[in-house]
Image (cartoon, rainbow, N blue to C red):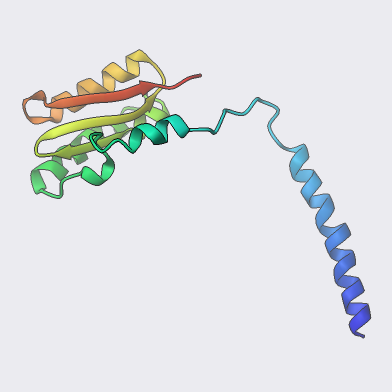
Length: 132
């Protein structure tokens, strides 16, 4: 009985799962994939002088500024998903914007939104235009 169960299990695994695996490969997109190597970005982000999301202040004023900027960005449906996902970090009243956007226009638009909500327009723009 054990041999029959083992043989059945092996058969199911070989013939039941293999066609499913190959079917997934047939559905793979034919477009070229982007290079996933982000070593350069990771090296840059290890720089202790760069503002990171962990530098976000927990003060009420700073979290309110971040929330207001984030809401303005997300509510603007003309922005790409990349632009809507930029990092907004506020500490001691200073706002830092980090991440990729699709164009110079998006970069300017996100910066303008941040300046509108930041006290004294204290905004550091570290947005990057993503490669197509």
